[in-house]
Length: 230
Image (tube, rainbow, N blue to C red; front, side):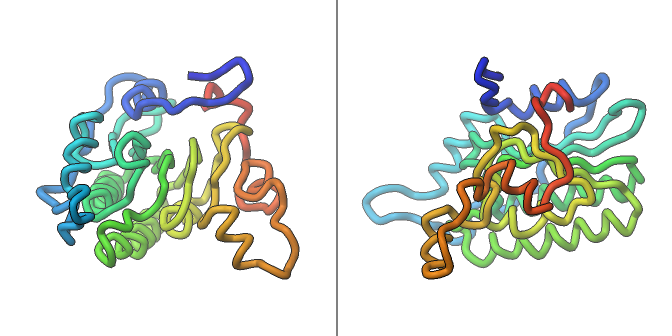
């Protein structure tokens, strides 16, 4: 999954969990029957969004874009939350919100030693409206409760981290790690949109949204040479 040029291709969440945990781990299932499409969103004469979600579920074998698990890493008990970019580009909608909260509650109740989130997310699912946006607040509150429980928190940027996930839970972690120097699209909005907003104030830097740009801005703690270092 790593090219000779050092480009890192997406790893399936299960492969990531297999590599991270020392041995066996337990999956934290999605929370109940949360409606992933509360607005019954559809584009007339083109598609219904629920059909896309069904397709994502079939492709990934997951109920949400998250795969959550608990187990042992280097003799420390950890809860790991991993986004799957093949599930709607790592969407964060109502179903993902509740899955995230369930994993957070488990970590707090079990008093684990580490909380790790591997981000590969395009942001809040716009098809779900305010119910999706509510996930920003919910995930921030969950992160606050985890930290109050004195559980060290780690965010790993493995791919794009954009929109609402970038603007909410990602920067709530105590330690922020970028998986490789090739990671880019770490931003709230794209370069074109940002350039329009900043029109007249000078061009945005070439490193905008890239690993080196995030590091030079002091927004991350470390950039790894390769995910093999994890």
